[in-house]
Image (cartoon, rainbow, N blue to C red):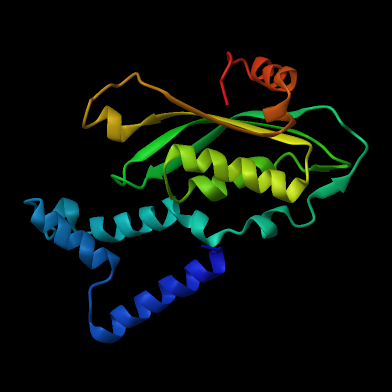
Length: 209
């Protein structure tokens, strides 16, 4: 859902909540603490509901960001047709299944088609989509497809490597497991040599698409 529609939807829900006397987010956090066997009125937890609300708003602020706005004015005409790579982009996201964090590195490459993008905009795009409730596979696809669409590039490749707290803290409890996902478009998908060059430059082995 576009950022403006998400903002309007949230405002509508919050407005109805206030009008009907229904609990807000911090009230729900306080209720959750009680259901977990805690006392939200004890000294250490008095301000926790407000802090949790603030933290959740920050960790999901990608819903308020729009890719068109982020890239506005950052595309520059240039006759450059070699691969451009921004690697080791730190990212943090929230698993939509358990509301637990997953985090790691994102590597992005593209082959320009008569225009390039300001390098700082690529990490901003990664942040815009990672600061939402996500699954890693979908996040990887979203980043690749928005860059392919907005840049009109000959090809885009995205590789993401992440650790998931839903695997580390619960379930299988495997602390050293890393999930790797990739999405290749254009020349990165159709030309093996291009794909292998990208993977070599980001220091990774072969990843099948």
